[in-house]
Length: 166
Image (cartoon, rainbow, N blue to C red; front, side, top):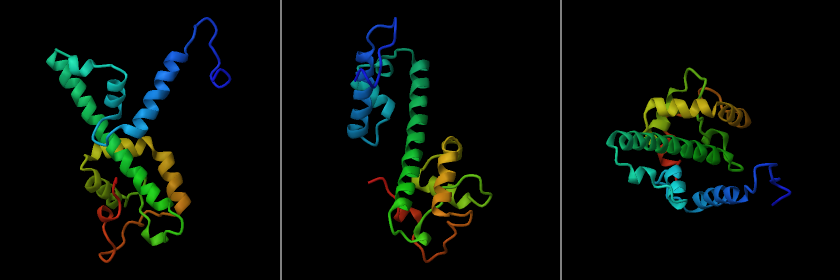
C-alpha cells in the first residue's frame, strides 16, 4: 500500500487512519441497512457514539435533525442512482427511460416523480439535483432525454411501478 499512499514527511504513519477509513467505506457499502444513515453506521462501527451519548437536548435535537436531513438526501440520491441504472440497461427502449430532471422548465413531472418515490420535500430534492447537476445532464445527453421525455401518457406505467430500491 506504500506505493499507492506514500508516507507524508514529518507526519508519521497514517496507515492506521487510512485503513479505518477504507474499512468503514467497504463495510458501509456492503452492510449498511437502507434505513440507517451511512454516517451513523460508519460512526457506530468505528465507535463514535456522540449522538447516542449526547446529554444536551438541544444539541441532540440538532444532531438528530441533521441526521434526518442526511437520510432524506441519501434516499433521493439512491433513487436518482436507481433511475440512472434503469436507463443504463442495454437495449432498454428509449421510450421506457426516465428523465431525472434539472434545468428544464417542464421538469415538474420528473421532480414530482422523485417526490412520489422518496416522500421527500422539494427543497431536499432540489439540493440533491443541484449538487449532481453535471452528472444528471451528462446522463440525459447520453440517453437523449429531452425536457418532455417523462410526459408519456396514461398508458405507460408510472415511475413508482418501475423504479424501486430492492
